[in-house]
Length: 125
Image 1 (tube, rainbow, N blue to C red):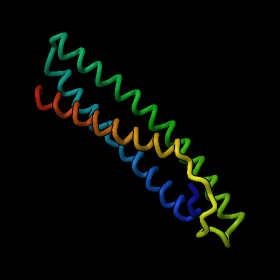
Image 2: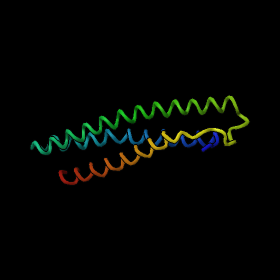
Image 3: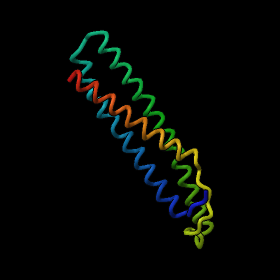
Image 4: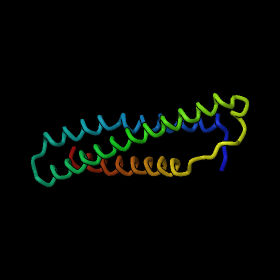
């Protein structure tokens, strides 16, 4: 499916802000996790703490890679706009379905993590 350069630019900026928000939440999650780790010494709780730490590390790396890819896409979109300024509102650019699927997956992953993490916090805080 084709879309306009201007619309793709808006969507791209929204995705970048969304992923930046997810990344900005991780330090808050880590702080809560540190509080639990300092209050509990049981191996079961510490194993769950370790599990969440590992997931946050993986998520943070994923967000960094995704932001890098999105910034490259953004530069590509801006390059197309510079080359064809008369056509920024014409539907002539292919939408990358893979990036849409990746953003959707990332959004769902964040929601699932946050839900699971808050349940863990409610149990031990």
